[in-house]
Amino acid sequence: MSPIAYTGTIIAIAVVLFVWNKLPVVIVAMLTALALWATGVLTIGQALGGFGDPAVIFIASLFVVSSGLEVTGVTAWAGQLLIRGAGEESRTRLLLLMMGLVSLLTALISVNGAVAALLPVVVVIAVRLKRNSSQLLMPLVFAAHAGSMLALTGTPVNVLVSEAGLDAGVGGFGFFEFALVGVPLLAGTMAIIVLFGKQLLPERNGATMPADFSRHAKTLVEQYGLASGIYQLRVRASSPIVGVPSSGIDLSAHPELQLVAIQEGETAGPLRRPLVAEGDHLLIRGESEAAAAFAAQMHLAFRDEKAAGQGEDTLFNRSSGLAEVVIPPRSGLIGQSVFPGMVTQSGDLIILAVQRPGLETAAVKGAGGIKLQAGDTMLLQGTWRALDVHLDDPDVLVVNSPELVRRQAVPMGPGARQAVIILIGMVLLLATGIVPPVVSGLLAAGAIVLSGIMSVEQAYRAIGWTTVILVGAMMPLSTAMVETGAAKLMAEHLVNLVGDAGPVALLAGLFILTAVMGQLISNTATALIVIPIGVAAAMAMGISPRPVLMSTAVAAAAAFLTPIATPTNLMVMGPGGYAFSDYWKLGLPLLIWFFVVSVFIVPLIWRF
Image (cartoon, rainbow, N blue to C red; front, top):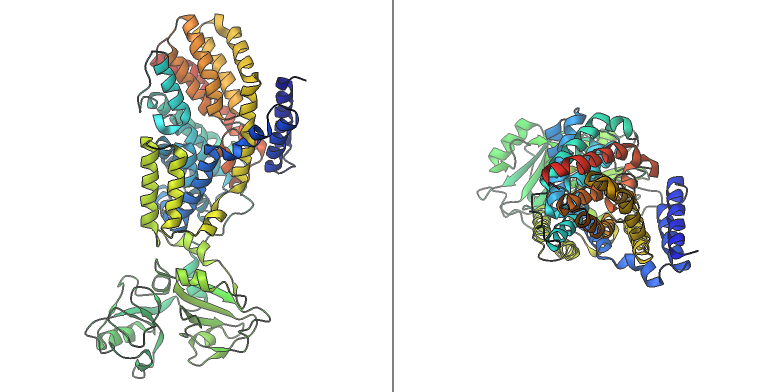
């Protein structure tokens, strides 16, 4: 068999295995790369070269940046804005806002960057609104493909066709000139998804959808009887408590009040100094009238008048959070006495309440201690960092990870400002093209780690390795198509077939070729193959190459039919719970719309 025959056979087998969906997609991808080497089509360096490709490294870095935005609550904030703007009931408004946002972001930072940034936002929205993620994630990606045609920076293909126009002597395309065709593409994409998406998309979720923690704080404070009557009082300079040891604060004159804890300054952590100082906070539990009288007597100020008395706002905010732990069998804490307001051994966490079946409120309100038993639950409060660090203890089982809770429930938390600045910096580097995209991504990912938003270990865990391996293993397929001459042979035969039928037939033929190849190999690689052939055909027919180039760019963006068509299609496959066959159902109507725009609308704007 010739190298071309080997390549075609490998592609056919890979597609069958992807559609069969019985083997993990990464295994199919790795077998594809190894088969190209085993048949002699590629060298071992070429077959594994995709793992060192800048696009693969760029995608990995985007996972880190995206996770940094999620960890700091930026994605939770964006999700809340989308939900607030769309409402909880309107599917249409939610889809339109989501698709509009991703298309605008795509125009600035490319499809991969926009989808990676908004993917966790949309997953959070799906969880919070109890919608199937499959109904939202594919529209997110397909709208990003349409949005890539709004500006020169939307996709590398746009840059390629603009440079090809300059080389052909007919001039390049302006930065926003692509929007002349991008706006109709996006409008049609939105209309098709809104009108037919519900019927054409599956109703399912990914295998590992996160739980909804948006109301986690309220649930905990209600369960432990702390939903009201909790006050955070700031110590003023004139307060007689200033300079008093923490053990010297006397509430005997106010028996209806209970001192839960003393927090140090703005840190929200337990007081570690021997004496109380101005700016510290007292956590008081009791009746509102008694708390107000005590605050007036001791010159204390309610930290937030609006949140006064609301347990979830006082105990759960940007600075501090709550965590529920269970005492497991054989725990070293069994038999130890604890009481509400007690500071843990680390000195960073406060025990707010203890619960045991049959004792619920007694354990919370009792002034005395309670000896811990297996199965008891404790509610702990402290800074988010303290919760992350000190709950990794074999003596307790954490019910819900504080890190996961913070990501969803605390919008714009600690580090959010730095994360937004890093994102803006990456966008500017990508938009201006000062450095290659992969450098922009690596600089942004490095800044996320150096700023302390994430540790190196957390950055490793944030990378979607399935996607990275899949993209890296499938990239050599493009190399094989070019090296063997298979792609060029296909393109030349098609041009010879339709060339005599006129320029519109040429656009149709080039669209079909580009779109079909783009479902299997990189659209950038496809464009690199088709562009020179299209320009040569246009010159031979005596027509302007500009409509041919723009039509090719539109066709390259129409990567809808398979998950392997683009990295972003693969990104949502797991979180959306999609099978290989789910893509063409919604993708085919969109492909037809892109064909109409490419063949019939493009020549109206850029004349032959």
